[in-house]
Image 1 (cartoon, rainbow, N blue to C red):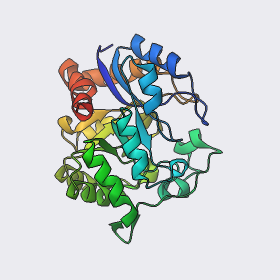
Image 2 (image 1 turned 120 degrees about the vertical axis):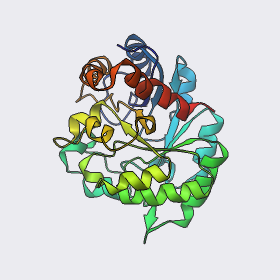
Image 3 (image 1 turned 90 degrees about the horizontal axis):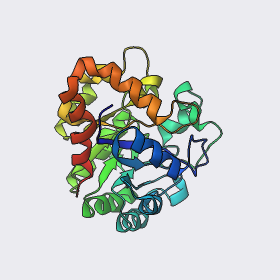
Image 4 (image 1 turned 135 degrees about the vertical axis):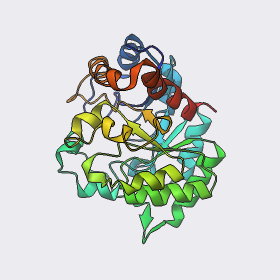
Length: 271
């Protein structure tokens, strides 16, 4: 197992969605699997406080779903003040997620229904999100796409770049309900956006639409690792990472895996 992994997408309890372990247990497993840094993500809101209390390589963020008011620049500012480094656009509240909530790849969120929070309307970012983007830029935070459809992600990231946001990450782009088309790669590459690849996304992907697919279509230096593990219905961190790294090692070698799972993610988080 590679040592020093940076995982940009880890779920833990407390949560309204079933998780394998609570934060201390998650941190212990992360340490055992060779992680140096892991970003706690909670669809319910902010993990900045939890990460600060946990220490040991934990990094916090805030998900802008309806429980925090959606387009709430104050939520971003407070989370950043408390040490958060990542801001996710809506996940369970996104129109794409709500439209596809019965899809198999969203089974882990069954029974959870937040109010809808749109980001893009008529091909433009809605006005209430501009202050949010400004707060992300002011804190030099990483803006992640959450569960926005790919067309919406390109629009939102274009607006973010125009307002000074430097760090962009597309979450699990190949999940079917997000509507990936290969032309999205060109648009996102022009924005210098990173694409997240990881364990759960590969497990849920349609045949042939896994990490290897993106490796053929996007520069390795613009890919970053986010396991998206922690859901009780899917593998634990240790088992999931072991299988994933073993599968990709012949393709990438030690240097390529190190770049993908350490260097690229570290660059997205460091101030």
